[in-house]
Image 1 (cartoon, rainbow, N blue to C red):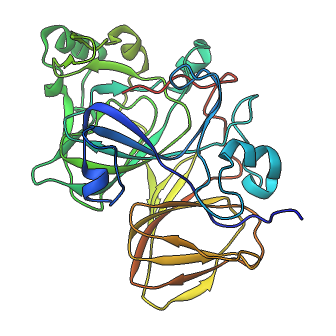
Image 2: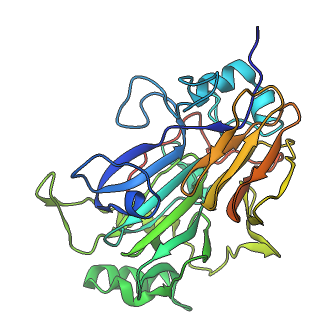
Length: 348
């Protein structure tokens, strides 16, 4: 008997980072490996061999429960095709699922960095465009992030600031609070600030050029981390363009994804629009999602992420408490975020 698709929850993949902390456990309730500083929890990922940690196999999220438990997201792409991803194109010749969902815990500032824009990626086959968005799940008092250049900053002025160690003076510092959302199109200079726990939605590729790393020493090497100033200068958007489009509850709308904040009251029930695929990131409350043929409902609690396939049989939702979540949509006319077959290795 063939298995019908249902709301899919995946096992998180935890990444230890020198700037990471423990909020993914203390705030989101996820059990982390003891004694480790965890900077990232990959909730939904799909990377070809050789991209992540030089792996010989796909690094792809594993289904956590239900009859498809143990299968990877990439296996589901091959098995179910458009029943899973609908009319949203896959990425590259390898057929990569077109979104990456993470939680980030910045105990320290992340590096000041930029990702290539489309012209740079088109001219450099080894580089790949990345656009992303941060939703602030929790922030310590006084937290801030860095986003975009100060108005009027030229390439020459910025280059001089890098040489003199005065980079921060030319980057806009933005105070943050819970519930804020920031869109970071490729070419935007940025750094997530210390004390912030964020949900990140991004294209599933990551060529990162560091400009400044706050003079830190990497404990794994005893040396400063590598910076890529010349490459970064070619990618930084000095025009001040690239503002997000948003309306009403829609927090971000770009060519790669949309993000909306949704709410429901305890006891609310209803059908789920399965024209997707759609990703839910739970912020508050407890809900159940279920397709008609599914024996046991998929539960959702804060810090959990669920992929709603494009084709399910009469899917519905029930909210056991007041709920708040992010809904991530994938435009069907999406442009590939890569200019070549495979994405680059993520690094921060």
